[in-house]
Image 1 (cartoon, rainbow, N blue to C red):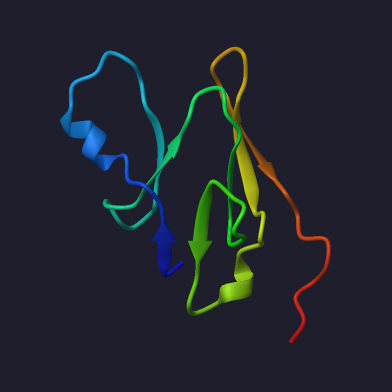
Image 2 (cartoon, one colour):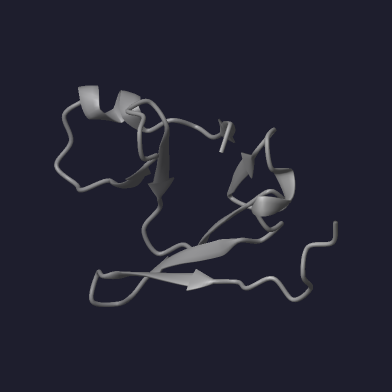
Length: 91
Protein backbone atom coordinates (compact mmCIF):
# COMPACT_ATOMS: atom_id res chain seq x y z
CA UNK A 1 0.00 0.00 0.00
CA UNK A 2 1.62 3.21 -1.10
CA UNK A 3 -0.90 5.86 -0.19
CA UNK A 4 -3.68 6.27 2.35
CA UNK A 5 -6.09 9.15 2.04
CA UNK A 6 -7.65 9.76 5.44
CA UNK A 7 -8.30 12.22 8.20
CA UNK A 8 -5.70 11.34 10.80
CA UNK A 9 -6.79 10.72 14.36
CA UNK A 10 -3.17 10.93 15.54
CA UNK A 11 -3.75 14.57 16.48
CA UNK A 12 -6.52 13.42 18.80
CA UNK A 13 -3.92 11.60 20.88
CA UNK A 14 -2.53 14.96 21.96
CA UNK A 15 -5.81 16.15 23.38
CA UNK A 16 -7.20 14.80 26.61
CA UNK A 17 -10.56 13.12 26.37
CA UNK A 18 -12.57 10.77 28.56
CA UNK A 19 -13.92 8.54 25.81
CA UNK A 20 -12.08 5.81 23.94
CA UNK A 21 -11.18 6.39 20.31
CA UNK A 22 -10.77 3.27 18.18
CA UNK A 23 -8.22 3.46 15.36
CA UNK A 24 -6.37 1.12 13.04
CA UNK A 25 -2.68 1.77 12.55
CA UNK A 26 -0.90 0.91 9.34
CA UNK A 27 1.75 -1.77 9.97
CA UNK A 28 5.32 -0.54 9.56
CA UNK A 29 4.41 3.11 10.02
CA UNK A 30 3.31 5.23 12.91
CA UNK A 31 1.72 8.13 11.05
CA UNK A 32 -1.21 6.56 9.20
CA UNK A 33 -4.33 6.05 11.30
CA UNK A 34 -7.87 5.09 10.35
CA UNK A 35 -10.45 6.05 12.95
CA UNK A 36 -13.30 3.63 13.61
CA UNK A 37 -16.33 5.72 14.50
CA UNK A 38 -18.67 4.26 17.11
CA UNK A 39 -22.08 2.99 15.96
CA UNK A 40 -21.10 3.43 12.32
CA UNK A 41 -20.12 0.99 9.60
CA UNK A 42 -16.67 2.00 8.35
CA UNK A 43 -15.80 0.89 4.81
CA UNK A 44 -12.30 0.55 3.35
CA UNK A 45 -11.28 0.13 -0.29
CA UNK A 46 -10.10 1.91 -3.41
CA UNK A 47 -13.56 3.06 -4.49
CA UNK A 48 -14.79 6.63 -4.19
CA UNK A 49 -17.80 5.80 -2.00
CA UNK A 50 -15.89 4.31 0.97
CA UNK A 51 -15.11 5.82 4.36
CA UNK A 52 -11.35 5.40 3.84
CA UNK A 53 -9.89 5.17 0.34
CA UNK A 54 -6.68 3.13 0.05
CA UNK A 55 -4.64 3.59 -3.10
CA UNK A 56 -1.66 1.50 -4.19
CA UNK A 57 0.63 2.78 -6.92
CA UNK A 58 2.58 -0.48 -7.20
CA UNK A 59 -0.39 -2.87 -7.29
CA UNK A 60 -3.64 -0.89 -7.75
CA UNK A 61 -5.98 -3.87 -8.21
CA UNK A 62 -4.73 -5.61 -5.06
CA UNK A 63 -7.29 -3.58 -3.09
CA UNK A 64 -10.96 -4.03 -4.00
CA UNK A 65 -13.24 -1.04 -4.54
CA UNK A 66 -15.05 -2.16 -1.39
CA UNK A 67 -12.43 -4.29 0.36
CA UNK A 68 -13.86 -4.69 3.88
CA UNK A 69 -16.08 -3.11 6.49
CA UNK A 70 -15.71 -2.62 10.23
CA UNK A 71 -18.75 -2.47 12.47
CA UNK A 72 -19.12 -2.21 16.23
CA UNK A 73 -21.47 -4.71 17.86
CA UNK A 74 -23.82 -3.84 20.70
CA UNK A 75 -21.36 -5.34 23.22
CA UNK A 76 -18.64 -2.92 22.03
CA UNK A 77 -16.57 -5.47 20.10
CA UNK A 78 -15.61 -4.74 16.49
CA UNK A 79 -16.20 -7.10 13.57
CA UNK A 80 -14.40 -7.10 10.22
CA UNK A 81 -16.26 -8.29 7.14
CA UNK A 82 -14.26 -9.24 4.06
CA UNK A 83 -16.30 -8.09 1.06
CA UNK A 84 -14.68 -10.73 -1.22
CA UNK A 85 -13.96 -9.93 -4.83
CA UNK A 86 -16.63 -11.45 -7.08
CA UNK A 87 -14.46 -11.55 -10.19
CA UNK A 88 -10.82 -12.61 -10.44
CA UNK A 89 -8.10 -10.17 -11.44
CA UNK A 90 -7.33 -10.27 -15.14
CA UNK A 91 -3.80 -9.96 -16.54
